[in-house]
Image (cartoon, rainbow, N blue to C red):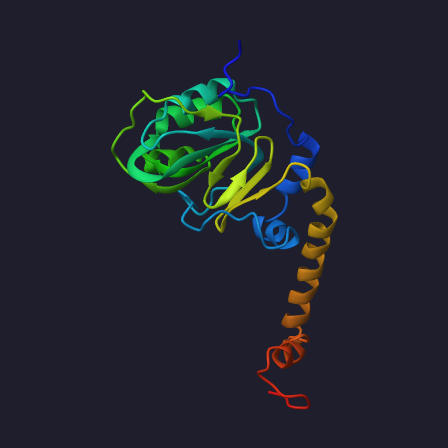
Length: 227
C-alpha cells in the first residue's frame, strides 16, 4: 500500500504558463491576485539577485530535521520548486551546499523554506536561488517522518502542491494552480499601465489623480476642500 504521507503525483501548472508568468514581477502578480499570496517578508533570498519561478513541490518537516527534504529531492520533477514548511525554526539549517548542488543537477528550479539554510556564501557563488527565513551553521537531523505533496503553511500562506511559485529580491508570491493562467492578462496589462504612468511622471505629470477622492472618502478632506 502507498504511503499516504507521500503524494507523488499531482497536477502542476503547465510549462508554457510558467514561462509566461516567470516574466512578471512577483509584486505584479500579488497585486492582480488581490494583494494576497505573498509570503512573510522574513523569507528572503540569500542574495538580492536571486530569482525563481516554478511549480510547488510541498514538504513538511519537523523543526531541524531534513529527512523528508532528501526524499522530496529524489521525487522532484524538473521545474519544481521545493516549498518547505520548516515551522520557522532557525536553530539549525535544513539544507546546505551539497543538497543545493543535487537540486540544481536535477533541474529543480529553486528552494523556498520557512527555516534556515547554511553554506550561504557558497550557495550565492553557485547562483542557485534559495529563499529562507535565515541561516544557521548547525546541521539538521535525519530521523523524523514528515509529509510530501500535501498542503503546507509557509510564511503565513497555504501552499498546495502544483501551485505557481515566483520569487525575487522583494520576496516570494504563490498563486493557486487553478488561478495563475486567468490572472496573466491582467498582470501583463498592469505592466503596460505602470510603464505608461512612469513615463508620464518623468514627463512632469506627478499628480496622483485618485488622491483627493480617497482623502474625502477617508474623512481627511471635507467636500469642496483640497490639499
